[in-house]
Image: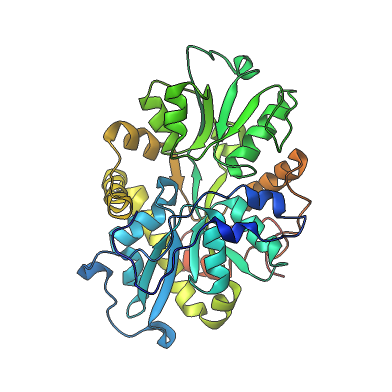
Length: 377
């Protein structure tokens, strides 16, 4: 848990997930019923993360949410190195950490945060629940970093997965949907809600999956980093890297979202923030080892514990940081959830607004990105 928090920030818990939702989103939202860490964690008081100069648009503060996960490395590095704050000038970044997607979406909708780093499933759920009025995806952040890791004494080939117990993080979350889709492609039948069938899907929080593996409660797991590398450190073997299932070996794992209200009222602030994420991703690409160390420093600050090298090194290597939101893969992930019976067909038209990102990319002499027909008309 982060050590420092604003005193006026209340902890959020899973109660918010128990509201009655529309049929289109109730099942996917159950996927994120894990307890949130809460929000309001403050960046350390150093000069590189203190606002300097004139506030953009007269705005003194922008509130940013993210997970203390390596797949949110753009946020970790951008905050730790002060790259994001530098672009915001006199507009102070107030960071907040989350452990569950619905808590971050709730914070965005309520105005507790303005901008967030988040995975595709909660972004889809939040957009659908608000009838297309709550948020926009304004940039990509990361691709990859998800693996099927197994006990090599029990599972030696992909065919051996049948009949075994495989952990996924939560019912209907991004990795759960991916595993169900992969299992269906093998011709195996699994009830999406109970997880029972030709393979047993055991929904297990990433924090306790390593213990479940060590105890033998599960035979493997389809999980993101660094959980996958933690399991490997316990003796598990990588049986499948999810990126090998996607065209060009890319699929979205983290996006940048913004509340539509904030985007409308403060486009210059959003553009400055995106300039910061683009520069952060460029710095990560050019300084991989230093970026990895910076991300780990931030993780230690946020969670109180840094990752050991045997976990950090392979986990970091498997994640690609990219400004491209890889919109076609988000649409495919939504269709996978529909096929699995976890989501009614959503209307994702307008979920993307990439105008400001493409303006920043042009200024940085980088190629623009595409919304795959799901952008604002």
